[in-house]
Image (cartoon, rainbow, N blue to C red):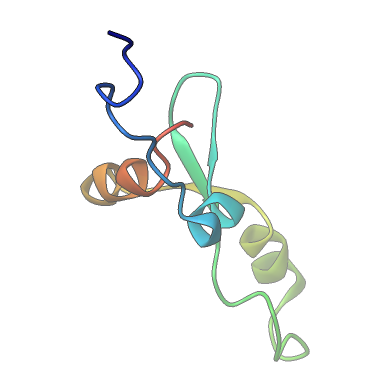
Length: 72
């Protein structure tokens, strides 16, 4: 008898999460910061520059993101 139907099914990646999060070489999850998409003229250059940097996903949310990205 073959093992065709006996293995665990594949898990689907949530594509919206896959576009928003990346995994670093050390296994941490990084994200973009909010508030950098519009209404930029009244924000200072330093503030906009800081918003351009990547941020780490908080420890409380890391497990949730990993469930959405099973193969990353």
